[in-house]
Image (cartoon, rainbow, N blue to C red; front, side, top):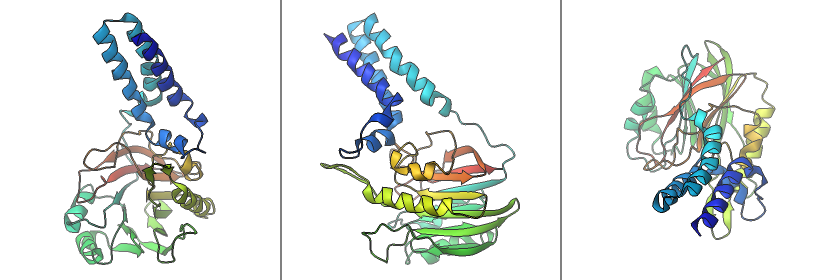
Length: 303
């Protein structure tokens, strides 16, 4: 009887890992939801192994090998990312939370590794002086547009707000910026973005506004005249989510899925992204927890 349960479970888990693109999005954006948490489909394997141990069933054990092998092929190489020896630059991305009680402590965590670029989201006007003071003289260049900000060791020019606002949102919604960083390896167009939040409810995975904002962000990046681009953003989903395909089709990131950033108490997904064009991301990792509900993400950037 249990074998009749184990076999369909193994086939379903395997199919979702390999053929997630066939899951339709018409019904509650189910496809995007599956893709956002695709690595966790592997949890079906320990369930099958537990059943096999409980029933002492070789048949169920063999059944578990199929999704286990597929998970290892799809995600196994991402568990231990390559290291960025000799990297040109380091960048940090962090949604600091508009309720963060310790901006100064947050900044100390972010700059411990002396990154070149730091992108922030949810920087409130009330907390901005504290962030500016904490970055201090080591980061003399910065721009703040709405609730997103960029601090840099290198000069910035052409800093401006970036319009990624969904049509249904008011004119005071400003969560994007673009600037050009004049780094030792040349000019880099730096984008900082905070896409709209998604909600999971009775109607399914509500990501329409997020997807609309992602298309606007992709249009801006696609038209960017500077060759090298860095995006520091809270994109409110993982890079597997098809709703972010307009952006992920233009930019690349580190190969590892597993430096998770949200929620900070028990991270299950990386919704904070560091992505590039005409560069590579040889190493990407999460930093220690701050006063935010997200973990900071850091990356090395190479030519």
